[in-house]
Image (cartoon, rainbow, N blue to C red; front, side, top):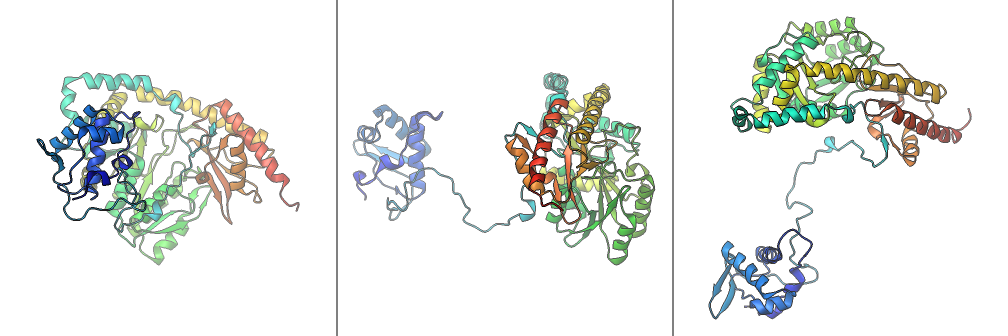
Length: 501
């Protein structure tokens, strides 16, 4: 048996007096760690409390408390007049304390001891920066969120006795009250004709698309997207094993003739489309092409996954109704976000589809998110029922229209015609086209030095495109002015280094 003096306790029992964990528990936990890692074996005698206290520079009573904790957990047996011995530890020859092995302090492994699948297609594309200004791809301003009103709704729902039972596990996913109100809201604003049974509520748009992909796509299936499309959705399709095909776009949206050619060459399982304002170009799909897509879907049997991610934001007249509102063949699955105009913590995703499909997707959601977010859903349900959502959207839409107009004015006035764009009829972003010779990554780095972050996922630089999607919703008029001034200066510095043609 090893002699206690040969064990360098002071090297692996390291006390942090600034920690919230009591010192006696720190000592106990590190001794347990040494036992579990094979440094202290079954039957090993620990130093007496006085001696251990002297070794560690601790009060004897602290060591006594540590030993008592080890005894209570079954790691130690104390025998009167004989001392304290490790119990329930490992038997055999103990591991040596060497510089190479290092002290057995508690440290979580950096790498697993087994092989695992790596999701290369899901690498995080988002940039994070501490810059004072940041462009995004079209997010709302959380400063305009209905926080006070929603806070009152949360507080009220928490106090209602009848809601307490709803906060636990329910046989049906989510709040039926919210589902009923959401169905009514979608029918009123989007011309749908759905009931609660046609609706599945999720926590986000991306989760909705993931559930649709996992349910409807098999490895090797062909999924068609726009030549430029939402990168997160493409990642989800690739994760599901889909083979992604693209179709070009013009001023009326995706080219239906190109889609027909794909259909005639091979079976197409799904078309993903953002018809209200195509992501990222903000082009609206024309009424004529919407009809053509529905006819092609019925003819060739492919699913239309319609994503109306920013339907609530329209400024110039009434928007075209979703394709789902005209679907008579059951070929359209409609996904979106309720509360997109509010902070992300107050939003929810949804899927609209025929009842039989909703029932199958609900099984997957039930495994992934058994409890949902009932409290938020109850508050959102009241936001709809009391008519507050409609009032809030009217108010914020006026503000976002003003911000769209301000950014368009700044781009025209400050960049001397170098940037081309068409002012969108809705949404929270403007698609801008830049001079071919501009290296957008270098331009973004120039802007970052002056406090403006332009994330790389906003940049589209290929043989065919030199463009940026600039979100205006999350920046005030003054912030937009500062951002465009930084862009102007950055463009001047970049242009000065370009070769003269």
